[in-house]
Length: 98
Image (tube, rainbow, N blue to C red; front, side, top):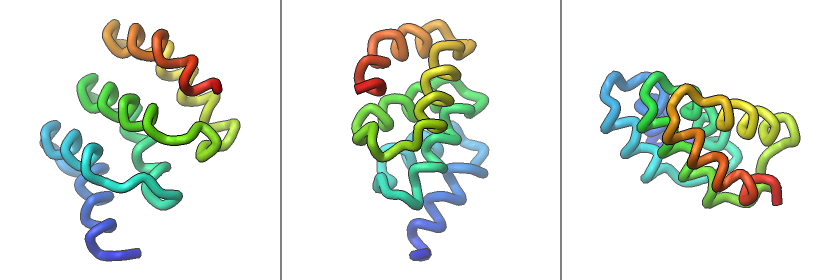
């Protein structure tokens, strides 16, 4: 794995700053290497990071995800503890299903 991708993934998963995690989500390329890490941010402690992860995921082809990943994304997104994230997932779930 390239060192720049490794640095992005480190900060995406371990940086204490919400702003850094959101920025990395915006900058990191979407690939088979980074996709599981982006999906993991949908479980972040901060709702702003979770929402940004959902936004990033709407920009990828749903076929990039396994059936299990799709189910988890929809289930957890629709049951998110943040009302804003719930509403976002309700409106964008059609994008994930297609």
